[in-house]
Length: 139
Length: 139
Length: 139
Image (cartoon, rainbow over all chains, first blue to last red; front, side, top):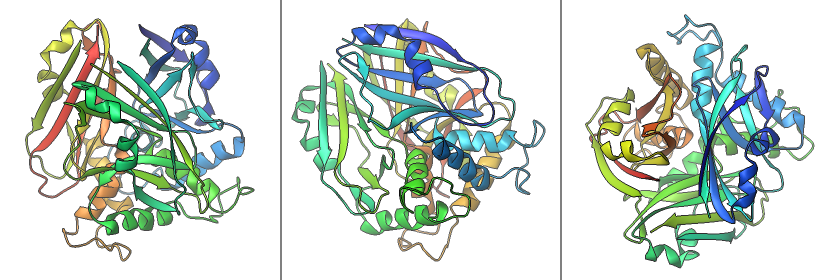
């Protein structure tokens, strides 16, 4: 069985956001898969997806704290500056975190750890809605 | 053909550890796949999986050297500090390296490069056993 | 349907290089897949693959600017130094970016965002040709 669907995430402010419920809610057919995988790609180069702690909002705030320092705006070595101070750091952060997730499905549910949730990593100040392509396959 | 299995890795000290043999040894059915893929997810948010050099222990030590400096403990910007000094850096390191690997299978074996091995990236001082979900599919 | 093929990328200088056309051109059978996925693994530990902005060469130059500062050569903490100044940083950069990409296929084409392209991240000064294993499956 194959399922492929575009999902549009609502615009969010710059930062790290839990979107597990939004992604899974858009894919009710996952419940029919005894075993399989879900792949989700974000079709942008200034936002990313990752899996991390799903309980404490301060973990997500600390992600922003670290990434904003590690990949700073207005650094003297940036040459691609035409699209705004937040643009080039957003590209680098996005590749550090990655554009996609592949997640196992077991007995109709994502087989994640207890504390794992899907983060939308929004690196632009005004990123707007973000498009995902979700692909599930299995039996 | 689909195969899905939980694998528990023995506790290891903080650092980078080669676990290729342990993972492949838990999946003897891979030998039956002419072509396919293996996906492995670590069900934790303070440890990660990556693929890197499988020969020199000093490469794995230098991974720790770099990551411990790039994502330092007790930095003034951490706000999520209740779970120990090693906790929040472990979350960030884990997302930098990623929670899963997808690897090609060819003629019953992982089609890795000569020097590639699977690293368990243990970022906690006392991480305990780590659970993986391995999913293989192919024909 | 399963397709698996080795692809050898021509040697490139150290830096970030767009290789979307080279990868897709080696896989004409993708056009037959209504829905599916493409997985590409680089079989090396000193080069990586990522997805990022496919238009401006200065974005790719800034990737090099950032990574060369974040993972510096000749840092005092490197102990694996026998294979050259560029070797150990290349290993770390490769794991930060990741050894593989998984990309959705829709109606015979990669379902990427408008601005997304495949980067070969060459971290060695003289990396030579780079081997990929491409695996596509779908229906």
